[in-house]
Image (cartoon, rainbow, N blue to C red; front, side, top):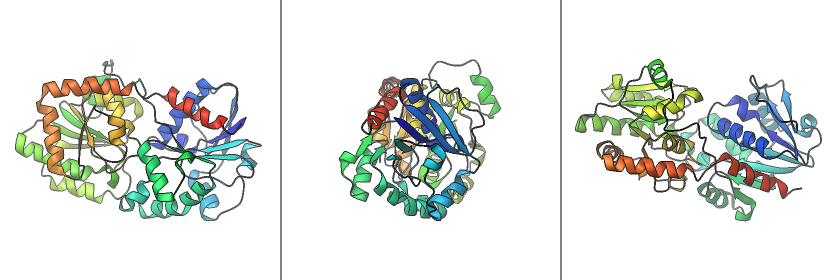
Length: 372
């Protein structure tokens, strides 16, 4: 088969779907030398990896925003095959499909946060997703979801036969290890950090629920006199006013560090240096940071909603994310109980072994083969 994959997110987005796409396609390239692949993208990859001979690139001299306007807003009927050449299957790993003529269509829907929590999306993004995603779902021959929780959401919200949806879990990257690296101290120094600290990772936006985390942290400082800093590693996204207000109202702004965008290469050191990883998200399609923290030997407190119990298993303390008091109590349990910390670390490492990008690529290839 000749398969085209929309690789735009991999070169345009540092985290989230971008990282997911890079890892999944990279594992697929190691697995499959039989099919021919065309990696289609809006924009150029500034540092492309060495692709095998059965992988080729088609890079458009236009950015992803402008291409989305042409295809999704203006509904310009220019089929993707004009750019990819003849293909048997087109896979979009980022919510929407382009116009296509004959190719089978596989579409990944990572989550339905824009439906379940529309108040957490920027108005422009919400309008775009509500307009573009449902028609793409209707046109897709098969859908992929990151978790069974997301699969259930898809089936319920859009009345989809579950047989049309395959769950492909994200993988665990073994670079996230508890074994210290030689430059760990240098990474922490470069970010102005000293231990101990509590870590959270993710884009600054309402769904990550940072205001509740900040209130829970402030409660811990006031009630338990913990010496820890609170460190948030993530680039600024949208609707961040409440986060800024929560920091200002905390009374301990000097102890709350927002690092901004953090390179992937720095994340293992940040996880390893943390006494606790807190992830009180209001909704996740999967939640890769859970596995990253567990792999680095850091105990985890996370939300009890959406996909997070499915991913965490018994390897994290799960709480109601909107309850700052409950979140503070769970964090204190982990910080103050060495036996619990040790148990969570052991279970966390075991949990990471359930997920691999190789297994994800094998599942993806099995979906592709249905259309051969």
